[in-house]
Image (cartoon, rainbow, N blue to C red; front, side, top):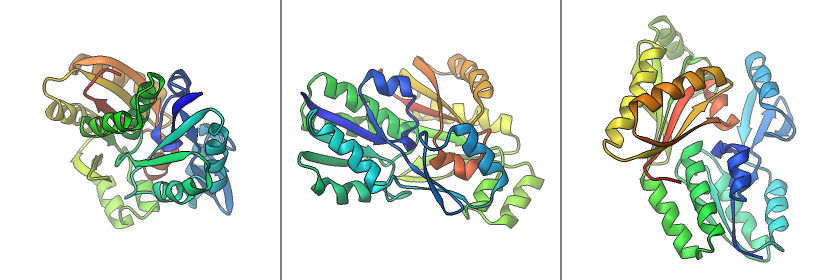
Length: 280
């Protein structure tokens, strides 16, 4: 029996092969289309999600259902003595609150952690915690590792269109129209647990270059583990990965697809960088 099991949610964007490697359990985020509730990666594929996002106005995401949380937690009861559950920032989602409410219904101890991040910012915390758990580290040691990862991680995403941000209410339709006319492409970052605009450029190519510069400014000398993020744009991500490797001091670089939690606000074609200043 494992001492501690690590759980996260699919908003973390952790590639399935990396999750399997460290025995990381993932609870699926909910996707709502019309009045139908679907589970990310289970009831709907990424291709189906983007097709719906392109053609329907009312595609949203929500925290995992209580039933899906309990399914994962109860499956671990006979496999681990306790659980650490790491989730998307509580300032953008109710996932942390749902986990807190449900932990009292499970017969082993569950410690819920707010990653204060999203996508692979959250994913790095989960992966490092899972590796520490496999090594038999204590709860206190794993929580200390998670805190260190939170302090040494940065996430930036370039958005090619404001169409979806306008649809989700994050910017007004007038702002989106003006930005489109001026070819303004925002760069989103995670700061104080909030996903917010940190810069903007007049072209998408400039926005991508600026993202790399933002990582260089944040980590001027450290060696980095990098996740190149994308939303249904694998070929673009592979090309961008080569530019990232040329510019940044990389210990490891891999490509990860953003979850629906981010994609619903930016649509397909987004590219991003999640950088962690330590080797996994």
